[in-house]
Length: 301
Ligand code: SF4
Ligand code: SF4
Image (tube, rainbow, N blue to C red; front, side, top):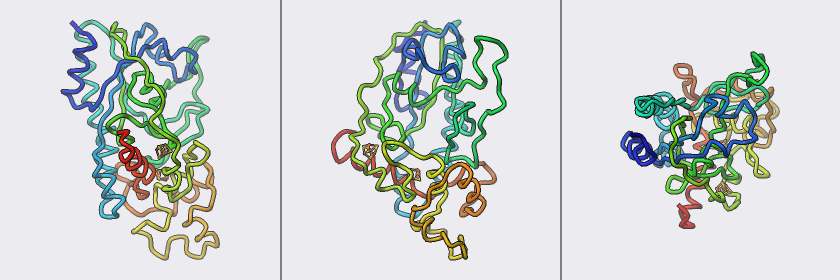
């Protein structure tokens, strides 16, 4: 017998920091390319899981003592290994009871057709520009659900001005995974107002000025996430040597779009990423650190 209580108990036992169940009906009106019902037409609910990223991994980056541990453990391991093993175990629990479980890990390097943003964490992202629906009524593959929307529907948290999900207890230090299922589970109410109070501290903390007007320029973020800023301890004078815009770039004053970001990627190579495809974070996720400190001081987390 599977029910919401058992799912939640098992999720916590298997390593999730938080779990919530959302009503699939709340996705009404979303693009077919984001719609979980396009993955499983008789889905009844979506189960959301949050994984904790240890706070100290952010702290060491911000104290300029360690960078690779965050990238390897806080990003790659959780998305590539932990969440997959976790989802397979949770999925087996559901499918053993006769229901389907569509497992949704973070598809970090793909973008649906029409989504021109990028993911700073990866060497690059690929937009599915050539995909077409195979018949009327079918979505253009791949369907990739919006994790932030799904987390809010599952009652787990809501996105802040930093562009990242903020959850009670965890703040922005988290990763997500989901299961779309036809199991008839009791659903939680969606998350209410965001915990973000629009203080602007994330925007001020970003060395690349990637956050502004409650929006994040993902390409700008990607350039500075990789370390094109003065506070990068691995930078030498050789970086952008003889480039008349060097000082402008280092000060976060140059605006990057998809083309110019990809152009400067070739010159930003401070820590190894070739073995994994995951870019070491050299901005220290300063936006999230500032957000966490602010919300902690306020007593919100
Ligand atoms: S730092 Fe302030 S503005 Fe930015 S996400 Fe956090 S609470 Fe919102
Ligand atoms: S602080 Fe880093 S992760 Fe945050 S917006 Fe700026 S570059 Fe991106």
